Length: 452
Image: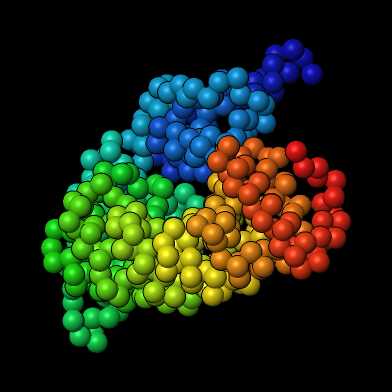
């Protein structure tokens, strides 16, 4: 083969490089997709390692405590995010070559028709979420389309938010719900059996929006303003009757700076508030019920503590301390401290001394620092303060490894006041054990923990 023919064959084998963006091509270059969400980046930013991600995805990665690059696994010398303006420009140019996106009404019909097809539903949700991005300026049109058919659009979005394929897509579904959440407030005052389904749907959507990290605080405050603007009494009744989701909405109202003091006081003073919250806590083991009790106590103080105790909260809180996840158990311990500060609460704790002591001592070293301080405080208030309650001292002294656990707290990283209370508890427990001939109980698996 002569040189001329060989050169022709070589030129045939060498293909020209494909352009990064090809007009008329529906495919999206891989470089335009975020390595975390695998979606086209809306706001590409680069890490010091050189890897580029969508800002929302990498910010969530960093906010959860990671300090490595997800793609390279290299440690990050800095968490500064540098906008990748060139890549953003290329993505916009590529988007301009694609066919025009369907209207929000068409996308909502696609979402409704995608029942049982997660991929199609996710595509529709992503399309709507892209339209409500600030740079798109189509938030009002999406809100108008969803509001025009709330009874079908909201259930479809809620269904996807609970069972969508990806975490980012589920957040997008809630962000879309947030655009119409104020439109759902009138549903809370509806009457009649035929409207119960709409009430349940509205409460679930409001709870999803108010508890979502992906929804801005301004949006949440606007929704709470809409909730407290009308007749608050019927709305509170509806939220309580709705169970755990309604309590989540009520907690958001009580802890928000939007309602004035009179509105929060009116909620906390509701005669059936604590009985209903205790019922929900027992029926659904709802963390929101505990947080709502804590918010009401914060608003009203002593009257709320007494109401909580009279409603029978002590056994339910003891059960939550013993069996709930750590964060919920710590909140329950905090409420037990509030209960022990009043006479009725101390008496109620003494009446259930065995259950309360077993729950608190059993969980004392299986919670965080705040939880340990709450545990010591509730035991000190019920065993030592003002003479204490003999039934609680006996129950604590009989708890397995009581002395050792108190020593662990004392020698740990606790505040001076907690260390002092633990020391007084330790003396009270040793005296009770000696009185009952149980002093040998100190010879346990915690014998290696030496006292001061």
